[in-house]
Length: 307
Image (cartoon, rainbow, N blue to C red; front, side):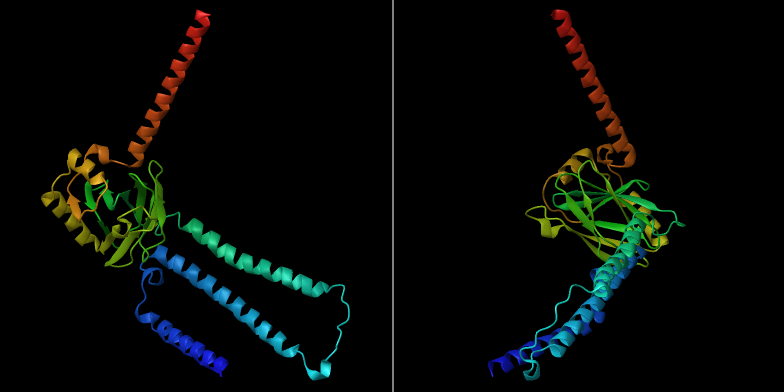
């Protein structure tokens, strides 16, 4: 009787799970609701991997049940002793080849998709660059082509590939918009690049996916995709009505703390994090190292002369 009660409890739980999962089509969200070509590629890869693993699981369980039933102990074969077998070449080849095929079936689409994601999702369209800086605990978005800045939200035109340049002001974080694509880390002095694109106008929730301390849960932002004309009008409105960001305001923004959405018609030169400013910084660092090297050589020569 206890076993029967346990069986019915398990069956009821399984039934509830089936009912819940059957309704997922109505509440699709996140990675299961791709809204752009990048997210679609990743969704297709997840789907293919899941189907392949499900097929393997079904086959393994079917064989498991078959062997349990076919070779179970029975009164008529009591005391049966199987003959000694030195090996079965055919079976050994089969159970070696099958895993190799499975690995290939997973590896080829995974590697192909991974390399594709490092390129523009729409090579025939002109891309737009947005610089993203994570700070404790907010997200700062700069538009180098438009010369404007937003905080905790970002607007993009639909059907335009966006090249996000990711950096961090302090703690390492991870930039993630599940409905538009996968995540990538933001790190200080080590820019990363992420391509995303929205198929249609809409609002998509983004978040920091790497724990960064006390207010980590509040590191969310909105991605607002608009038609190109609406995006252009928004840029004009920002340039005309939003305040310019001062150096003092920018430094205050970088300090740990939470803030609401903000919009600026311009930002100070110290806020620039693009490739050009980064390369200048690299050259400066290189020049500094050369200068230190020269000083060491001069010091060494002076020591020799002294001796």
